[in-house]
Length: 370
Image 1 (tube, rainbow, N blue to C red):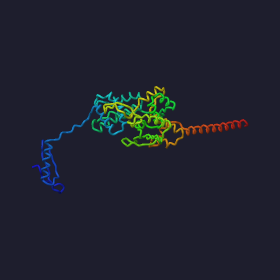
Image 2: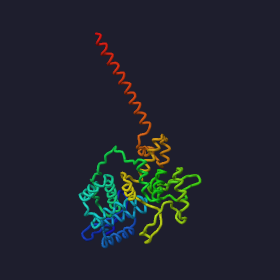
Image 3: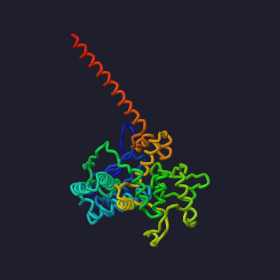
């Protein structure tokens, strides 16, 4: 008999008890004998026909992992973040695209990062950061179990080094050697001190030629809505946008656009720029100036405003910063206040030196009389 009436802590209940394949099976706590019989039947069936153990995936092709993460980024994160990850992933795939994730070792990645440092510390650290995120994505989704980037430190960055900010003369040289469309593009960035992606997404309905305003939109937080801010036009920007508006293509909403091949649509389409990284290298080389990127135009404009004693709150609003400390990072120039302070220091020092010299001469003279 496999069903028994037992006493547990002063309360009677039915218990299931049987042996099968040398193993003892017991369940208790049933109020009625019928419940216990049904439980016994289900337990015997479960023992005789066990469910297949789900095989846990512990490895994956590195190429597949990278593509899965890029697909995830494309859906859940910004287009800029997707573009950045795609740019770096192309290098990884050339190195390890035919390997399993488990075949990629810590030494392989560390050697790769060291080699990449020849292109710059920031680029190498960006590779390490995004690689780490890719493997962590695989672990979180249970595609893989190991992250070979763990334990690899970021390359040290020398702190306190001022970023290179081009002079107005250098900026003018770069703009001068560009074609007309690119000149207009650079002027728009320079005259608004906008982020590149803000200018890239600029549409004609964001341009108010009557009130001379440009509405720039940026995404403050990942996955958040676009936040607009209005920037008054300079005369130079007004002239450029007025000329562009007169010759615009009414069917295209974007102020700056290009024709490109869309792999998704499998044809040439017209749309906004996403990234134009290479153009600045070409223009700086052609102009014979030290290489700088689009973002330097933003820094340069902020420094000019600061040197003109524009209140930092106004600069902060123009740049679209939520945090005042972020704006302060942009103010690389030495403003009038710092120069005035050093002039005062120099003047006071001269006065002190004069007093000390006078006292010394007096002492020497008095010593002569004795």
